Picture (tube, rainbow, N blue to C red):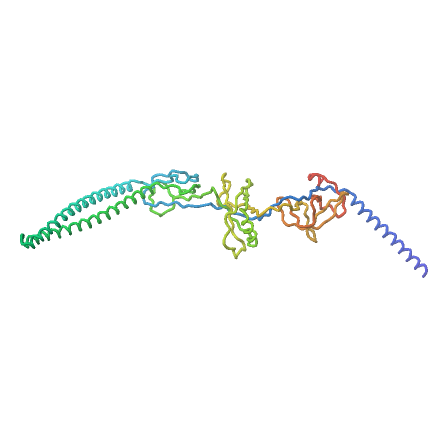
Length: 401
């Protein structure tokens, strides 16, 4: 019995000794592992100005779109442009056969000349009848006096008085004739203006600077007034970019708009250089279906890099934060407790520190809390690190070697 107890005590003692040796070796191994310098790249935390931006997907829209139609009927005898051509305001696009309208103008002008002659003739008649009326009225007065004195007969007096009254009616008729002729003259003058306008419509010109689309009707066809579309012209200089942002941003957008125009940047999907414009429009309601509000940026588009219907990335800059704390976005890691970074201390060892990121922009993250300017953070090689690991700063291409 005593032998068994002794044997058990020896076994326990040996186990404790082996466990102590194993723990010591594990600690030494861990310490040895931490002393091995892990190759990493390191970036600097800095304080610098950083813009506050809203990003969205935008769609390019023509600044103005005009559908050109003919305002008169006739044969389309000439097209003065090619499809897809840039045209200037006032530049001739189409020509409709002007001969019927030239003839109508000539007839209207002839009618005006006739009416003017008639008015002059009637005015001359009125002048003649007016003179005769004055003479007749003088005669009527004299004969009335003579008749009262018995020098002339009552019949002679009545004849003179009747002639005077007839001339009164003649002058009234002359005046009515003149008014009628002048009305006809005004009507024919209006017909002349209408004929001139129709003749001008034979030459169809561009109402704006823009780019022509597909030609919808060709030379030789008969067109009717305000019937078929001839061409669609899009004004692309300047041009709009439509985009929608969450409605919750509206108050901030309005606040910054009150301080000045907001910058909008459009970035084509094909990698073309970004184009800068200004916020020109905010819709008057939030879409209840999507919870977003429509905005428009206006762009000069002098080089024609933006095209109607094109989809692109849009960046709306609200303001610039003057002293934002900024770290490379590659330094930000995500763990079970949230986001963190590895800080490099003076002994070239790392420690884990939780951080809160406000926003990211072009490979940089604005830090709300957790970092200070001047601190160094690991930007690549974090998978081989644990708190306390020793590091060796290398170039990016050397991290995986």
